[in-house]
Image (cartoon, rainbow, N blue to C red):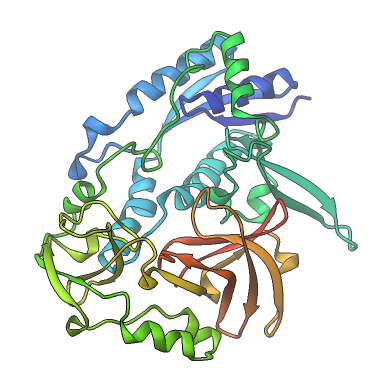
Length: 393
C-alpha cells in the first residue's frame, strides 16, 4: 500500500518540484494550499499575492495529476502569528514570523489536518534535509540537516521543530541546488518554473512593516538621540571581567547620554540594527538603531556600522524559550558545549559556546556580533546539523 503524503503546495517552484518528486518516488500525493490571510482589519490586500499563488498551485496540481484543495487557516494564523507580532513590537522586541509560522501553522495546524486525511507524512519545499539513527536504547532519533544548497539553506527557519514534528515531515528537494529545482520545473513545463521566490512576511507577502504595524499600534512622537562612540559605558564594558548574565545584558542609556537629532513616530516601529527609515541626515556615516526604549518612547542611534553600541559577544535565552531539536543533546546545569550559531537567516555560522545555568542558556561568541536583537531566534549547530534554538532575551 502506498504511503500518503500531503504537500503544502504554495504556488512556488520549490513545493511544485517537491510534489513531483514525491509522486515519482511512488507516494500517494495530495496537495493543499494554505490560505492564511484575508483580514480586512489590517488591510494589505494590494500586497497579498495569495490569489495568484493559489491559482498557480492549482495549475501545478492539475499538471501533475494530483488532488488539490485550498484550506483556510486565516483564523489560526491571526491568533497564533499576527497577534503575537503586534504584542512583541509593542514591547520593543522583534519577532520572526517565518519561524513562528513553521512552528505554529505548517508543522502544527497543517500537520494535524494532514493526519486527519490519513497522511503518513507532510512535505514542504524547504531546502533542508532529514536523517535518522537509532540510539543505544533503540529509539529512533531524527536529525535536521542543512540543505545541500548552502546559498538557499532554510534550516534556520525550522529551528523550533520537535522530534515528533520531524518524524512526520519529508523534504524532497533538500538534496538539490536551486538551479536543479528550476531545471526540473522547466522540463515539466510547470507554470512556476521561472517564478520569483516569495518575499516578505510568511503567507502575507511583501509589506511595508511600519505601515502594517501602524494599523494596530498607535503613532506617538518621540526623540531620536545619538550616542557618541566614546561613551564611558563602552570603555567600562571592555575593562570589566563579568559574568555571563552581565555580559548578556544590553547597554542602558539615558537621554542625557547623547544629543537629540530628530523625532520619530513610535519607538515600537523600529528594531535594533535598523538603518533605513530614520529620516535623519547630515552625518558622515549612516545612523543605526542601537537601542529602543518603548517606555520612554526614545530611539537611541549610533553613527557608523562599527559603532560599539551595536556589538555584544554574549546573549541569553531563558530556559522556557529554549527548544532542543535533538533533546538527547540537551545540556545539564553547569555544562558547556562548543557549537556554531547564527542569530539571523543566512548569517554565516559563528564559533560559539553554550553555557547552561539553572534559569537560562547563555551563548558566548568567539567574535563580537552586530545587532543582537531581543525577540529574534538564535540557532546552534554541530557541523551541518541544527541541534536547537531559542528566543533571544
